[in-house]
Image 1: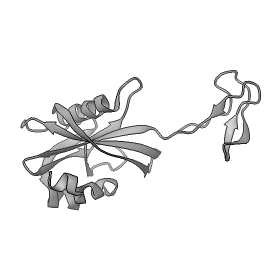
Image 2 (image 1 turned 90 degrees about the vertical axis):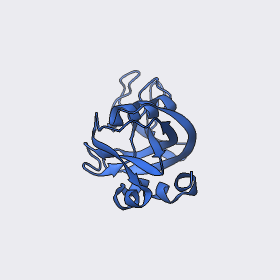
Image 3 (image 1 turned 180 degrees about the vertical axis):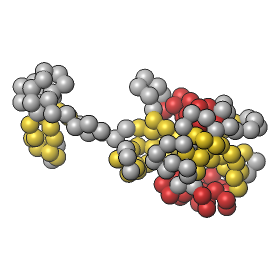
Image 4 (image 1 turned 45 degrees about the horizontal axis):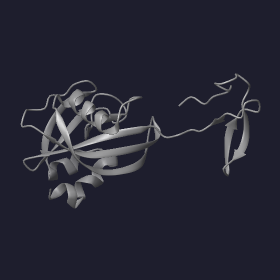
Length: 165
């Protein structure tokens, strides 16, 4: 993420000031405060006939590795809509949100600190096809998925809410 040097409101050079017990870039003229907030992202956890849907990533981070369908929330989009959009873009499948699974923070190589909102999603029985930034999409048994899924998502496959759903 780009760090501001000048105020985006009045174009005055920003100064470092302690605010809320943290050093922050602030504007001495208009009092703008630059908060470096983690971007929100979503993750679709799809289980069908006892198998877990994974996509093979076509971009960094984790290029060529298997993961749940996931991506960033676009401005003006709800988290639920973003989850279903990412699922459709990366697998060709349409789905419906069954439930919120969890909300976690993660540190990802090229993006830094992210907020990840994961949903359990129901889909029809169509075959998934990799698309957008996924080069493949298919179902794996939970044991197979545990062996290949990216480390940041592996813990989900040991959760009773996923395994025995």
